[in-house]
Every structure is written in C-alpha cells, then in structure tokens.
View 1 (cartoon, rainbow, N blue to C red):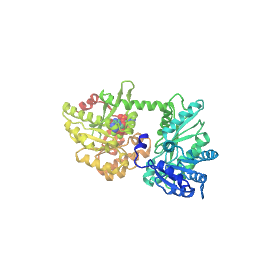
View 2: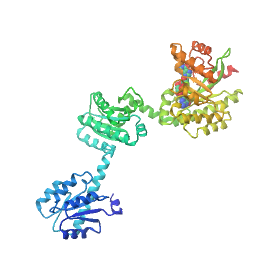
View 3: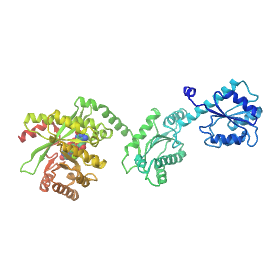
View 4: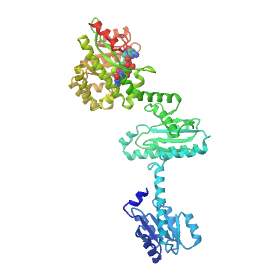
Length: 561
Ligand code: C2E
Ligand code: MG
Ligand code: MG
C-alpha cells in the first residue's frame, strides 16, 4: 500500500478554498511540488469544482469565513453528497471555538493561521489523505459492492469478534442459495440477475433484522446469515417466499435454505456455515423442499463421501475396485444362449466391506471422478474380453457403462480406440451403454458422439430406456444398436397393467426400428415367459445370475461350449 502510494504516477489533487489570495499563494507554494493544486475563492465555487473534477479531489483545505457560501456551508454540502462525502476536509482557522465546531461537523483536521512551518502542513495533508484512502479500501473490502452485505471474510471476522463477548448466547448459522441462478443470468441478462441478488439481500436483511441477524454474500448466489437461535424457521421461510415474486417480473425465483441450529461454539466459525451449506446442498434439485436442517447423520454421510473420494486412487491401485460381470442371455430359441455380459463395478473395501455402486457412482458423477473409474472399468473389461478369447477361442462381448460426463470428453474416441488396439479386440466386442437421460442434457453433442463411435464400429446400447423425458424424440435423431428397457417397468410389469403395456409398447417400437431389445432386472420365470411371448430378445437379471467375478462368470461360457 505504502509502496503503491509512493510510486503511483498521477499527482493527487488538493483543493484550496480561501477568499484571500495571499493565503492561497502561501499554501499553494507549500503544496504544489507534491500535489496538483486547485483554487476556489468561496464555498459555492469549491462545490462546483468538487462536482466536476474527475478523478476526484483527494483533500480540501478550507477557510471558514468566505462570501457567498462559507466553510461550514460547504462541509454540510459535501457531507450530504454521496459521491463527495468521503473527501477529507482540513479546516484552516484562527478562531479557537471554530476548531471544535468544524471537527464536530466532520472535518478531518485543522491548521491554524498564520501558517506553521511548511513541513508540518505538508505532513498533515499527507497523513489525512492516507487515512482517508485506507478507510475507503477497508470499507470496500468489508462490503459486497452489489448487495451492500458484508464480504465473507469480514463476516467471519465480525462473528469472531461478536463471539468473544457473547459465547453464552445460542446462535444459528443459515445459508441461502438460489436455484439455477445461472439460468436467470443467461435467460434474462446479468442486470436482472443483479437485481434479483440485490433484492434478495434486502429481503433477507429486512427479515433477519428482527432476530439480530447479520448477513454476508458468500459467493455469487449464496448468502450466509448469523442470527439468534430460532425454534422454527417456518415463519421466516414463509416471509421470504412471500417476497420472492417481487424480486423479478420475469424470472421465477426459488430459494433454498440450510440451517445449522444452535452452533457448536467449540468448532470453527467457518465449519458452522459448511454444515448449514451441507444441509442446503442436500435439497438441491428436490422441488418438494425449500428448507433443510443439518444433522449428525448428514455430517457422517459427508465424511463417508469425503473418505471415498480420497481413497479412489488407492482402491484402483490395490484392485479393491473390482469389475463383476452379469450375463445376458438370448431367449428366443428353445434354450437360453449366452450372448454377452455387462461389466459392473464393485468396491471391496478393506474396512467397510462390499460397497454398492449406488453409494459411490452418484457421488463420483457429481464431482467428475467417475471418468477415472469408468476408464478403469473399460480397460479391465477390454482386457477380460481378450483373456476369454484366448482361453476359450471365442469372443464374449462385454458392455461397459458410459457416464454423461464421458460423452463430453474430447478424448473419448481415442481412449476407446486405444483399448481395442492394446488388447487386440474389435470395437464391436466392447459395447457401450449410455443412459437415456444423457440425451436430455445436450442432444446435439450426444448425436454427434454416438455417430462417431458407431462409425468406428462400437455398438451403442441405450440404457434405462423409457425412464427419461425424451425417449421417443431421441429415437428419431440417434441410431442405436440395442435398447435396454428400464428396470422399473420390468419390476412392476406383472403387478401393474400400465407397466406391462409400457413394456409391450417399447418392444413394439424396437421391433419397428429393427433394434434388438434387452430386458434387465428379470428376476423370475413368470417375467421371462411374458417377455419372451412379447418378443423380447435378450434378458439380463437375477433369474439367470447376479453380477459375478470374472472367474465365476466362466461357468456360463463353459456351459455354452
Ligand atoms: P445399470 O447400468 O442399469 O446396471 C444394472 C443394475 O441392475 C446393476 O446394479 C445390476 O446389478 C442390477 N440388476 C441386474 N439384474 C437385476 C435384477 O434382476 N434385480 C435387481 N433388483 N437388480 C438387478 P449395480 O451393479 O448396483 O449398478 C447400479 C448402477 O450403477 C448401474 O445401473 C450403472 O448405472 C451404475 N454403474 C455400475 N457400474 C458402473 C460403472 O462401471 N460405470 C458407471 N458409469 N456406472 C456404473
Ligand atoms: Mg448399464
Ligand atoms: Mg440399466
């Protein structure tokens, strides 16, 4: 800061306001080397100069007794002007009582006439400018420019200060987040977005004022509030909801709230808000809830997830992540025929035992680690295809799951091609299961990627078909090789007429398009019989086998031979 002041190129501007020319000259002589000096001979002229000078004046040296508008008048006018109010004023006076009056009015300092030694005057001017600049910087860092709320760092500091004297009072940490705020920005423009943020900040402060709350804007669309412990937040949430429609004429705003009640004062302030945020994140995307409270289970779950995230590399290295294979059988002949397998990941955790993919796949999908895991599974599967061909002299195609995020990986094609080369297998032997809902994210990309992969000979299976919103739409734009009916229709098929008709419909569509159809999740013979009669080609499910380790899978190959 000091350094910045010394070296900055432009001289700061100082305005001398005095109706006596001689005074102006004396002061001007003292200051002109260091500052760009401007002069005014009364308050009105000074005010006009202040208003019209950009960049602004750093300091005003003010005589009190002048014609037209005197010194007091000018100070008053400066103080009531938002843009000018922070300019420091040094009053020059020879009257003892005026000193008190001017300091009370907000003057930063005073210099007595006749003038002191020049060095003293210069030093005082410098010090006042420095002080005032530091003050502006500090106050701009403590406040968020857009909303006027505290910045996060300042907010934390402030709480720590409050806590020094109020440790015994029960307090809550509350976090607010706007759903899909980036969409508001994109669809209605940043200005609307900014207005929504400003509006929400105002609403929150207004409501939380009643419970001694202080607030900050922690990130783009995330607000933190620290307030006295509330028995219930229903009322507060209702008041917030009632105010939301007024935030924007165009955009519909939805706000989520996470509460960490009665904060534990033995842990760090930052952690209080991490906990409230955890609660807030948990209901992201759940349109039935707008409010969630932190609990210890939630905490344990997040610690568990954190551990899994930290352990993934080691798990891959130690082969604790194992690929299992579930057979798919063709059922249209007299007797089921082994057609292929699906590779499904399992985590044999040294301490926790077997962890199901349902526990870690969604977690890794959320943070991108899924790619690492998928690449590992693809490589294992490709290697296995090769091993079986060498052992049995025939290829068992294996399908692997491809996550949405893989679709956007520009290296996807090369990664897969490299595997076929390395293990000397054909593209058709490594089949790719893509979940139907990937189509909804970005149809154009999916169409392009699928076309490309098919051109290389890869076979695409559309997983979970019928579960998304765009099943039919998708079939008209993408050519796929296999349709896998979503398991939930199979599960309900014999209990519920609608599911049964849905299965029939999907099979008919597949027939119409001349695409083979797989039913997965088939658990009993009754299901199998109905599916066979409807013309379903391939079946995967516990009826034949659960997913099993590669060596166990070999019994299906051996039976086949
Ligand atoms: P999915 O790809 O739809 O896989 C089928 C799931 O159904 C597997 O669950 C399988 O064990 C299960 N299943 C098969 N037959 C039956 C049955 O008859 N009854 C019942 N109740 N379930 C059956 P799993 O292995 O737990 O995997 C769940 C999901 O996790 C998979 O659904 C897939 O989306 C994902 N997943 C598994 N492995 C991977 C992987 O390596 N990469 C990616 N990206 N996702 C994977
Ligand atoms: Mg699958
Ligand atoms: Mg599936």
